[in-house]
Length: 322
Image 1 (cartoon, rainbow, N blue to C red):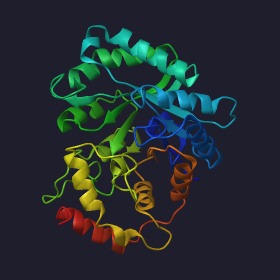
Image 2 (image 1 turned 135 degrees about the vertical axis):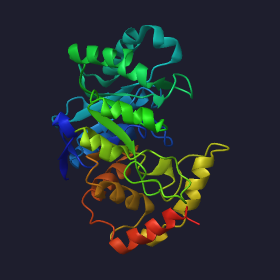
Image 3 (image 1 turned 45 degrees about the vertical axis):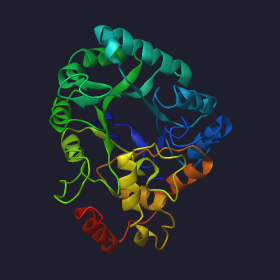
Image 4 (image 1 turned 90 degrees about the vertical axis):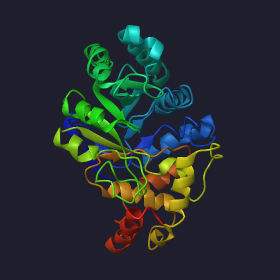
């Protein structure tokens, strides 16, 4: 396993991380026994960074991780999140404290290493579901997160950058107040790193990775497998009318040319591609069983995708896989 420094936090984390959506049953069903075994297998293979959230299975992911870590001696780094509801904004400090205390109880820990804001960031609060404005995030939310730091309940604070308003996200990153960012980046959408091609029909993530890097933030890659589109088969029925998933599945079906040499599955190609980006400190695909933990760890040691195949992929991407 290779390790990197998570930006200015100084934490030395595994390049392959462990996303809690899997053990929270966001990405298909699993059992508590399988979830715990997946964490133990990840630890055996050198994975040290675990990213969970109360929203993953209504606390199920945090509970499973907490149980799995009991009695383990390995050094681990745990990140979790707070998602604020509209009816909690009159008492942000209290809402954040209650959420963190509940998370710590489920995790069986006194503190976490990183606490992320799990809302979407828009120009105005409530513009879309679970959204906060820049003023919210740099005002009462930041104050509440700093209270958690002062209380010793988190070491660092960060942002979850998905489905965001780009100017607002840039403002938050440029503020220098937050230490880490969860960045959406995968084979089907590289706009967190590179400009959006004119012909690509993808959500524009505003090149936040180089911007965050310039601010010294730690960068955590998310959605490396495009919610399951970049796997051999979806592990759950697609939601009716999910246009993004339909489009991603259509595009992913054209990537079989990546399955050569040591890369045998599309999920391996997806993870190798994310790990190849040296601006991303760790990537946290959702893991729900030991086999997925093994594949995640194995991909961190794979050789990069050859340039000729990357060029073919870029050509497809620039014309929206048509």
